[in-house]
Each structure stands twice: as structure tokens, then as C-alpha cells.
Length: 266
Image (cartoon, rainbow, N blue to C red):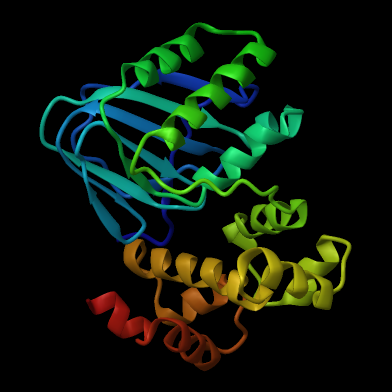
């Protein structure tokens, strides 16, 4: 156990997107995260498990995994894998003028795993992304790839309405898990709005109050710290900007049904 979660970086500072074949030599990896990009992994062959945060997914090809930058993940692969890895930075999304691409990315970023039907065009699109250098063409291929993934039967229902930009920005702020704050007013101020307005937007778009959206990120990061570090409960509370450990314990139990100590021992 460690005091901090290992962070790996597989993309150059100046790169906004990187696509490469999945490394065949990967078998077991230590729990780690990538805090500068969103990762999409497509496996057409392989077996074993992929754990994202505290959920273990079986590798049943063809399958796609989505790992957000705040999430911890690790592999336990039992046969030779085949597939592709796509790393995407926020800078790529900011640079894009394609609102449909942004809408689809917003949808898939809420997912962890999709088991797909066989579809050779997915591998072809990944290969095209490896070879392409022009931003506009890359943008179009990426949209085609994601649209193909979510259009495959039994993947997931596509929400056609436009995602509110405030929600996207709110979630982006919450992705910075090194400075989470359990305070709606804090995030409302950063979004140049009022707590009441942020709460109304969250209720309309997500059917939950802003405090509950914050809680998802707070509890998610608390669970990562409890599972993947040896920080004691007081240290976890301090990391999450709780001034009082007992308040953190009550907060954690209210949202999970167990105390941090019990969760860690499960």
C-alpha cells in the first residue's frame, strides 16, 4: 500500500490525441490512473479482467472500456490481447468545433464498459486514426468511431438532446480530484453562476441536486484512497478538504451505508 496512487502518463505534453495498438505484453498491472487524459480501450481478443475503480469487468471481446482521468484501473489479462488504445486530452475537445462529437463524448465518458457485437469497421477506424495527422480529419474519424460504437445493438440508449454546457464544465471541475470541495457555492462561483441556478440546472439535466453530483465525485475519490493507499481515515478526510474527521465519516456512511473503516475491510 502507498500514500498516493501511482500516476502513469503515456502521451507527450504537446499531443492532444494518441492512438496505438494495445501492447500484447500486458498481463498484470498495478492500480494506477492517468490524470491528463480520457482513455478508450478496444479489445478484439483477450481474456481476464479489467478493474476500474472498485468494479471488476470480465474481458469478453469485442469490448470497449472507458477510463476517465480521475479513475484508478488495473489489468489481469490471461491470454494474448489484441486491440487499440486511444488517449484523448481535454485540449482536443476544446479545439473541436463539432458539437455532435462533444455530445457523444459526454455520453461515453459516463460509461465504463460495453460488450459489442463483432464489427470489423471499428478496428479499421482505429487504424485510420493511427495513420491520420490532420486535425479535422482526425475529428471526423473519431466521431465516426464513437458513433459506430454506440450504434451497435445492445450497447446503450443514445440521448439525443444537447448536453448543457454548464454540466460539462461542472463535471470537468470535479474531475480535478486533487482539490475537491464539498461546497456547491464554490463550484457555482467558478462557473460564474449562483448556487441556486447550478442546482436548478443539475435537477433539470441530471435529475439530482448539485450536492449529489459533488457527492458522487467525493465518495468516488474517497473509495480510491481507501482501497489503493494506506492513508488513514483522518488523512483521507484531510485530502478531501474535510476539516473534521467525524464529519467525513458521517458523510461517507450517509452516501454508502458503511463507515470508511468497514468499506476498507470488505
